[in-house]
Length: 171
Image (tube, rainbow, N blue to C red):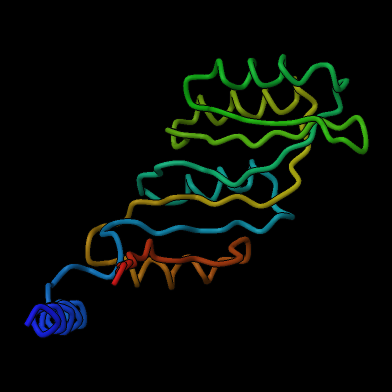
């Protein structure tokens, strides 16, 4: 009898786990569009791109810079960047050379004084951009697919994506 109950419970759990949810939740986060700027475009061009729209920008991330400063300057570089109200960074010194590499994230960067300050920071720290960046835009709700297509038309854009939601089922 115990085996029969256990079998029934297992079958019931399997059926419940296989049912489709029919909620009306969007398949992507409303208002979010992520735009990858090609690596051969400098950050000032990314700022020009941002400023050409009257859209909110959450952040710019996935940036990679190297510095011409001596390798023992890593902590100085990180402290300098992290002292900015709009920036945070991590970094390392390469094991094969004397190169400082940092990974900054820029928030509230729609602010032009922050943009100008970042451009000065790049000069001060002798930074060279080594990758493209991802701009996290907020667009009007319900217009995300249209904005994605619009962004993809620009020469500086490598790709644009909606901020998709994925459901993970452990069963």
